[in-house]
Amino acid sequence: MQSKEKTTAALAQLFEQWCGQAPQQILMLPRSGSNRQYFRLQAAEHTAIGTYGAEPRENKAFLNFSQHFHSVGILVPRIYAEDESHQVYLQEDIGDTALFSLLPKAGEKFSEELIGLYKKSVTQLARMQIKGGADLDYTQCYPVAQFDEQSIRWDLNYFKYYFLKLLDVPFDEQALENDFLSLAQYLLQEDSHYFMFRDFQSRNIMIRDGAPIFIDYQGGRKGALQYDLASLLFQAKANLPHDLRASLLEDYLDEVEKMIAINRLEFSQYYYAFVLIRTLQVLGAYGYRGLYERKSHFLSSIPFALKNLRWLLANIELPISLPTLWPILQRVATTDRFDIDPTLGKESPLTVYVSSFSYKFGRPEDKSGNGGGFVFDCRCLHNPGRYQPYKTLTGFEKPVIDFLESESNIQDFFNNICRVVDEAVQNYLERGFASLMISFGCTGGQHRSVYSAERMKKYLEEKYGVKVVLRHLEGERENWVR
Image (cartoon, rainbow, N blue to C red):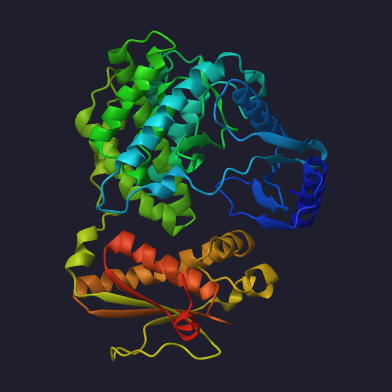
């Protein structure tokens, strides 16, 4: 992987060649789950997203797919320019609003507007898979051209090694492998001559002017229609209601029937089998990121995936026998290892007081009489306040958030804090305590500590349902306007 300095220099040169203006600002964006690096380049009249990819074949796949999809009317980012020698390219800047960011908070309902966006997304997915996949050059796919038996076994083994084994679930390995083979052979009976996005979920659907625009399809390949639909409608953290899933399935099939003839009943039978394999793949991914790498975001997502698994076990009946896998799934689905009752915090007397502060003025006073709780020092993190573009901004503004998530190790820092805080909160809830204080300090109390406090508030409310009182001491002193 080349250095950031070399990448930004190559992108700056490419940007100027494209629009005739040197970029006035190059901001590195937060990393996704891959090793690709994204930058927003801006000049007075132009903006673009610059991308560096360490794998040339993956870059080539994305560029070729993008140009093809755009040529047949599928809404994807336009490609402005590329520099193959430096493994960088420029694509259209379509903003920062992902469908995932519009999902309702716990307890809230899906709005009609959001349901409309999901309907637009599934109908455009059908067009991308069928119309977009018709004349696509599948020789450009990376890493493989077809969702074949090997691909299916990769997904299933991900579940076996990174979820079952990390949970110490006992099983007969050979018997389980036999069931994996049976499931793979059944799935491969379905028509697999369409474009499979492979990671079609709400984080990869951007919304601009009320229209969904798809991104990050560089792992696409030839496969069955059902896989992508299952990925979106059963995305664990999205937590779509089952009646909405059923309605969107019908909307999708209506669009498919405009282009090809299908048997709806047969399609649905295969569809739920693909939901199952996608759910197992997701549990494997969450297991790797959460149980192995101990990342709090992925650990907190496991209960949502298990909820999907429980629904599948109770509501579907596959036309094949899985005598070893099915009992294992029933055992996994009933585990209480990840269960945290979100109503527990609402019924508890516990209030968590979260604060950000500046070490120049001292840490916040504890008025509960409990001794001050946790104090975390954020000064070990790369400070955006050292750079002119961020001096007047604060930790709840997007440029600062992007800086911290891409230019510092704040993700690992926060994950480590969550492991400490989790133990205290769970203990306090069980014992009926009424107060816990968590404070984050940095040099100026404006960037790193504010980001951390905001994120902690959201984390505690989503995971435990506890009452959180948030204060930004420097903001109160300076009278910030959010």
